[in-house]
Image (cartoon, rainbow, N blue to C red):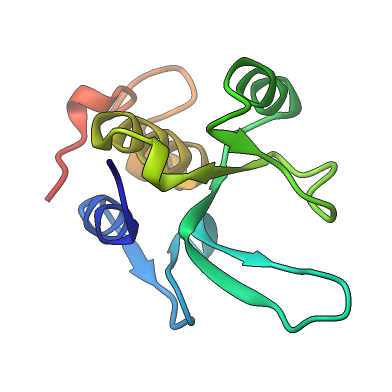
Length: 133
């Protein structure tokens, strides 16, 4: 099963990723977040940074809904994330291979075209072209 150390290893293995100082983990490429620890908010209580849950950029509402409906035991959303193309994933229920795919896809959607490839498909546009460290 996956954990915060796996998220960190995978994210930092991608090109041009920086980790932003935080209570948990927070990774960006080109100043754009693609995976970070879940800041759980419960009314009347202080925010809790959950490193057992990752927030992932998924691209669009259709992909978000497909993940939420298709695997509700793994993916969820929360108030405040309504219109955003983000899902939360329970790391302990996730295999590392699947986490690798999710983190790489999130990176690809947020990275500048020069890192990923041009919109017409030239360059490093599939995961086989990306080397994880």
